[in-house]
Length: 262
Ligand code: FES
Image (cartoon, rainbow, N blue to C red; front, side):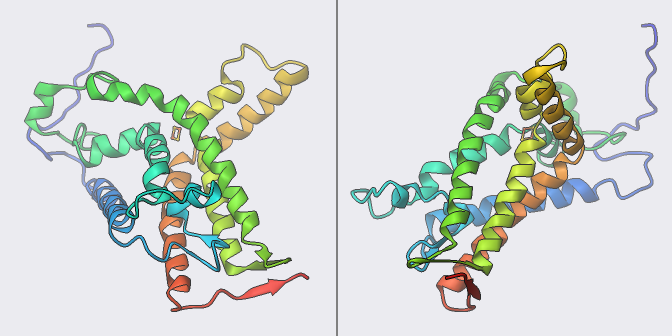
């Protein structure tokens, strides 16, 4: 075949001529994702107390938006919580994310293990068939984006809610915790490949009127798309840091310092 050149790849799982610690990144990513899944499962299914404090003024990011509370749903089974109803959206959004696909293909499936690193023999047999079989669900990413934008707007509602202190307005550490989480999530959404397409990538040109605005948003999104991995991990980490903060305040282990504006 013209232009085809066989790479000098050593055969055998994990074999490589690379001299760096290539396995560091997939190992850390696998550990981080494994921790995130386990933590969420335990928190949602077993330890689902202390998910808010001061009568829902501040709600844990894992359980936010607390739809059961927001929509005054009271006649639900005792074991049910809002996370059980809404987590499929962030899970679906992150699970079909283009960057996430790279992470799980490398960390969990070893297909490929890394650049210029030999993968397990079975993966040579199975091959890589893109968005086929179970992976056909990855095509739902653009729809998950629409739902994620709805969830994101409800998170900003939660941030505003943290500023309401029984008749007065103010700020507390909890406000900043949820605001940082919402900001990181916003950057994750803005830097999304499907978002780029949505805001201007589908247009043939950006000249004049609304299309020039679309072009500007597209270029802004593109600038941050380069760092999509950063926004993926920081926004994910902040979900758990925020949850730990809310749990610690709700349990009385720490306080939530505040500044009341009047
Ligand atoms: Fe990662 Fe859309 S590509 S969230």
